[in-house]
Length: 538
Image 1 (cartoon, rainbow, N blue to C red):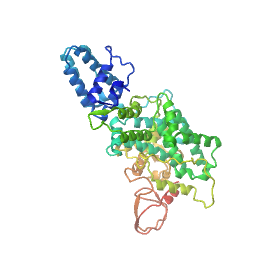
Image 2: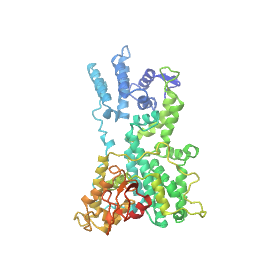
Image 3: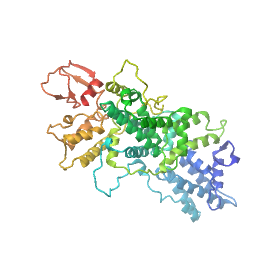
Image 4: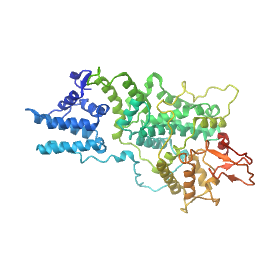
């Protein structure tokens, strides 16, 4: 990593001095990684403002015959920091303030070259790291299908990769550091949202499979997502690949013996390759090999690398023998992993997304069901059989289980954000399926749209005024009413208070708009049966 003179430990001041004098008189670095390591890892020990303050003090207080040369090298190090990690100089207001103060001192000393090296005015805004990319105008006019069933595996993989990339690149060094040190997601909403997306994809895959009524159609969905995982590998998106494989490996899917009999041999072979790639065998050796060999854009399996960081943090102390010397062995080990994770912030996604599909995916991934509810639905699809059934070809030698860091984290986006996506999804649906532009969706078109939302209520539930058409307001009202954030969650688990009534015609619940099929119910409070709800809704 750096000079052999440093050994296994060094004080922060010694490390800073070493980094300064690594630069030659022209500002060349000659492939030494020590400055990059310090500028990335210093936040493990001190803030960026404190590091910049130390450099400013050294610059201001410099004396002696070689003072001017040392000052120039300090500015070279600052310039290298600005060029290598520009986002810090756009987002960290304390660092920005000290850099401007630094420039002021250089101006007072009449060092024009130093003044120019410290210029941060040309750094672009990094607000885009927190926002969705704007959709580019299409050269050709045409209707983009909003049906997941109609999307090619690569197209679906690309849009999942876009969502993954936008989520994971927002995670900062301090977010990772907080999780490694505290071992939890408290006060870490950015990392929590990324993990929730991982779990959302895994659960969504299960729901898409279980939404189909016959073994053959379920097998077709499984086949599609196996090929999606293959395309995710081609895109070097290992994190979503793990989520998809985890969803298909879940017990609610792996137990579907009848369904798996419809899988073609070549599909089973591909599935075996994908599960082997992300298996935990030999500390994820297959994944690590594939990830290290990947060139260019790549998204790591976040949980694996977080476990690596925790292992290093537990084994090595930050400081050596209670002294003020930093443990350089630990710093280097942490740097290897942090460098992979943080590099995504400056990467460019190789995906041109259709934003209508992005809005639809975002909303679909927000629909949450518990593990028990999904398993009950699996039992509804294929009940337990007392006869011994052959092992499913989809069952890996060792079932994939969610990584510890990912389990138990559910989607918790801001209600305002969810409402925004709901309105954008509805706009997209009407833009693509309201062919005569009269502001209504017909029953036939609705049946196609509903395929994207497993267990969506029937047409007549959304058609609140029962005129045979669904207006934009009716669709928005339905999603807002059914949204899990605003009404606990959609479907099962919603508590109802029923009073005994007799209805002479089909009736819908005034609370959730679901179809009431039990004509006589005694007054009580109870949880609606999952099997009953699913049977009604599908």
